[in-house]
Amino acid sequence: MSPRRRASRDVAGARGEPVSFDLGGLADDAPAVVAAPAPGTAPSRGGRRRRRALVVVVAAGAIVAAGLVVVAVVGDDRSEARLVAAPGGLLPLPDAPAETWSVDHWNGEGLVDRGSTLVLTGGSLTALDPATGAERWHLETGGPTWCGGSAGRDPRPGGWPLTCVSRDGDDTRVTLVDEGGTVVGRRDVTFPADLPLAALADGGVVSAERVGKPPAGGDGFEFDYEGSTHPSTLPAGRDVLVRATDAATGEPRWERTVPYVEPQDAWPCADWSGETPVGDVSVTQLQAVGGVVQVSGCGVDAAFSQDGTRLDDPATPDRVEALADGTILRTLRDDAGDRPISQEVLDAAGEVRWEVPGQAMVPAATDGTDGPGQGTWVVEDGAALSAYDADHTRRWSERTHVDKVLVQASGLVVVARLGMLVGLDLATGQERWRTAPEADPAGSEAFTDGASAIVTSAIEGRVDEDGEPVTDGTLDRSTSDATGPVGTRVTAYDLADGSVRWTTTAPSGADLEAVDGHLLSIEPRYLRGLG
Image (cartoon, rainbow, N blue to C red; front, side):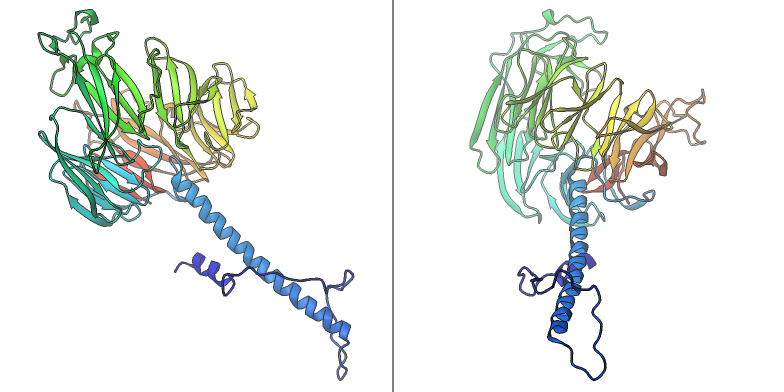
């Protein structure tokens, strides 16, 4: 039993009953110290009352002090729980992290975040403790397998049972696994090997199938890599039927048809699975992230909730993103799809909750107390940076531009601005500190333990033609001989004043992720725990 748990039990009542004190016997003018009676004399009745009252006060003070300790412990536990559940949230990292465990894991295989359990997918399923790397269970699945929810991509971990899909040609197995690794549901079905499938976090399986009569000459066409293929010359495309079924029973949940619309260019109609791109109007991608089912490809683009609600606007070029609080951010873009024009925050049913007055700057990491949907939205409208309360009332506005919001934590928002890292007060918008990082932080990833903004930056050096670091040493990023990234610098900046608390280096190609409050390094051959 941990000291925290022991302390909370020691101060609890013997039967878990509330403790109360009656201080009515203490006179208003009672002295702070009661004098002892003279030797050989009996104390007066009033003196006994005052001593009894003093004993009660002392006991009450002791209990109150113990209660404050319990409140502090509970507060610490709640703070840690918020951090663990928040995007990019880490347990306290006062010193530079070092490797605490590692396992062989090819980067092409999947990782599924289930809070206190990390599941490795691939040819089988292996559950690990993200704190220690210890294996909790292993399950053979009979083929390449992927499951609903992806570490680093889903803003919120899913629940149990875990829904997984394994494929061997046309043979498909759907498996539901509980937290202990026990199979609680299994179903074998036949699907065409090229039919896109995705597992949903709520126990469903969704597919995306081209429907209708294929073009007379087939779906293929000659794709020009230089981009001269005009969409009007493509074969006739077909609609996509999106179908969701219950993973355990196969019962239909919903079906939606996404009509084919002639694309603006031929790039979405290129199949890149081989060494060279091949033109194919049946190209279809399907993914499910954060409760959003995204269908894209040649002439189709749509987003649905897990219950089949259409989340995007079919008449506009928009993008849909799931946020950590369960809401959806819909961004309308220009016709080229490059520049955001407007944004809306939707609830899970697709209803508009807020028309954002600019572009919502969603932080890479929060401490779980004051991010979007929790207390403060940070918005840029091109001329000013503003903060809005949870009820969408503007709190402050400053005429400035930022490239990216990295961290919202401890009453501070840390932004990338013109190559600098800047800490702004969330209450007032006033600048508290600024610092010059090793590299432009606009493209950085970020994490927080509530005390630091932990920011990554690329270390430039010499790489060979395959992008691998040259082994004769790295070079400063200002050196003209630098040809590419040779590693990742990870730096913790104190949220109080922007000073560097620690710095460390991750290997080139490492992808850092926060899982259950622990920092993981996902590398081409290994998965490492850092702490």
